[in-house]
Structures are given as structure tokens and as C-alpha cells.
Length: 495
Image (cartoon, one colour):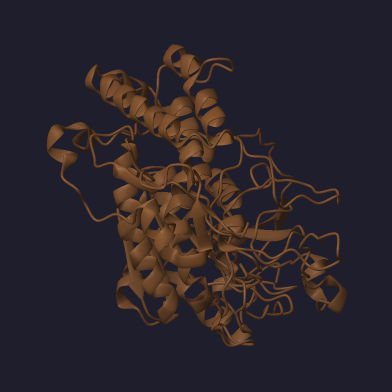
């Protein structure tokens, strides 16, 4: 789970952010790939915490909303769809304020080779339809006044089928436009799908022809849309579908995907955003039913921040990842797609659990549409301190993510005691350090879990979390029992 400054829908009251409170999770958008520079890390020994942790957080230090203002001085409404997008992609959410951005780089490649293409998704047998929430299911004329025809001159023909890279089913789009700017935009989604497929799934020479500024298919689709020429637009979608079938049949798409060693964050975010927009955004109001001042608060870590966590912990395909307080499952899904590892999540809030399970099914179907293999996904309900399955999984975990900023001190202490059972080298990523300020190993606290954690403080920048645009700190704690063993060996010398 996490805390909150989430996605507001029209007609609902904004919920004030909890002071310096957070718990975890993620939403998705599509930032353009950037280069990452290794952040300056601050090593925090188990017996010493940074000075910043020794003082209470003042009111001025608490996260506050930085939503851009309209010209009339009112806050711009944050929607589920808008929150999925990264800084580079959300053209509607501009602001004049300078912002530091987290740079994104390629993660260190694991020595274990990963099969990115889902081979079975490219067989003719996979053409059988699997459960999928089509774009037309969430945006159509049946939604009443929310949507209108994009091509009103041809009201009888407003449905199209779009072919993805794999041999899986088409996705159905209703050619409509939202009457409110903060609603899902199916034609924009369709355009971005085509752009992503051309960038990552098609041979460069063929992609260049379709992206040609004068006569390329994308350019002609834009002209048809601008002229409100429905028949031409539908004809161009058919032309696209024929090309996809031709490229797949000749093995060109498979050849391109087999040549990939990692997936670009922009493509990962597109798939996650599609899933989130179809499952979570229409039901986002259910996530606002939280209890302020408790551990049950909701907020999301955004994909570029999560990707940086995967990079800095060197999470690989053969590893086990666990998200404690996994909310609607965004981070769990991202780990399965981006890294290809075994990915676990545990969540206590009932509404978030329901959405997480719906997202899992939709996400798997969408990854198959795109033709990608993903790691095993496991979602658990309930209290992660009492869930016996999670307790067993923690013992084999390589990376654990805990958004503990909104946790009570009692919960943090109880969770820390579970770290005694972690394997050596396991890394725990958290929003607050689990090692208390000024902690030292002494003969009186030899059994404390604090003694086996070596903590490094890292920084995240603006646009990394859903509850604020402000930068902040996070902590990577590695289990290392060597210092405790050395202390015990010397019989307390140095205490």
C-alpha cells in the first residue's frame, strides 16, 4: 500500500495529503528514455543514522500539492489517466516551475539470458480470444455525455479493430472523443500504440516508411483525423492491420523482438498505462476510502522511479522480488515485465486487492497482445506480517520494496524483526530507514535486526511519486551480518 495525493475525478472532493505519510505503489505512463547518472549515495552504518533522521519532520517539510494552476487560479484536476504519464509525456500538465527529473538509464544486464518474446503468442493457435478489456469498453457512445463521435460525418461506422504484434486477438476501438479533457482518449491511445510498435517491434527501414513526415501512414492518419474524414481513417487502420499480419507472417517482428535484450521504459509504461486506464482509472474513487493517520493509506510510486530501484538493486530475471503493501499491483506487474523475475505482492486493503487481481488478468492479456514473455506474478491478500506464504517467500527474496513512510513506528518495528530471516545480501528498499538514529551494536541488543542492516541513502527527484512533485530520499538496506559477527567475535570490544 501507500499514502495519497491521488487522481481526482470530477464531482469528488479532493483529499488532503497526510503529513509526511505514504505507503507504496505505482501508476503508469510513457516517459521517453533518458540517460541515468548514478546518484550520490550516502552510506549509513547500522550504528549511525543521518542527522536528518534525528529530528522531527516540520510542517514546512511535509509534502504538499504542487498541481499546476489554471489561468483562473484554480488547481488543475489530477486524473487517473494523467497521473500515469511521466513528465516527458504529459503535455497537458505543464508548469512554469523548474523541476529536477530522475534520469533513466539502462539497468546492468544480468548474465542470465532472458527470452523476451512470448513464442506461443506468435502461433496461429493463439488467435483465440482471451479475456480483455477493449478500448471500446471504457470509451464509447454508450457512456452517454462523456463521449462524442470523432468523425460525426459518418455516424454509422465508428468501430475499428487494431492488430498488435502477436497473433492474438484484435483490440476494438470506438472512434470517439471525450467531452472532458481529463477522460481517456482512445484515438490518442491508438496513435501511441502504433508509434511504440514502430519504434520497438518493426524493422527500422519499414518503420521509417510508416513514420515518413510527408506520406507515411501516421502522417496520413493525422490528416484524416484533422479533416474529420472517418472513411479515410478507418481505411488507414485496415492498412496498418494488413502490414502487421504481413510482417508477422514473414517473421520480421519475431526477428526484431528476439534481438532485444531489455525493454525500453517507454514501452513498459505504455503497456502498464493501458492496463491501468482500463481497470483502475474507472474505479479510482474506491481507493480514496482510506483511514487517515493509520497504516492503510494509498499512494503510488511512478514507473521511472521503480525502474531506477530495479537498476540500483541490480534485480535480474532469476531473482525474487517482493512488494509489501502492493496496492493495485503496479510495481509487481512492472517487475514481471521489465525484469522478468518472480514477482510477489501483498496488500491488506480490500478495494486495492480487487483492482490488483483485475489488473493482473488484464496485464497478462496485454503482454500477450504485444508478444512479450513476463515473469511469474503472485498476489496475496491480507496482513504481510501474518501471511505465512509471504513469510516463506521473504526468506528467498532478493529485493523487497516497502513504502513505509506512513507506517506507524510499531509496524516498522514489527516488520524489521522479520528481516532476521532474510538471506544474506537481500536488499530492502524503503521510504524511511529501518535503522533508528544513533543505533549502535552493544551486548544488550545483539538480537536486534538493526545490527544486520547496512543502509545507503539515495535520492529521488520530482515526478517520481503520485502524492507530490517534491524530491525526497529513499533507503536501500542490505542484509550483512559480518559486522555483528565481528562484534560478537571480539566479545563486545568497540561497544
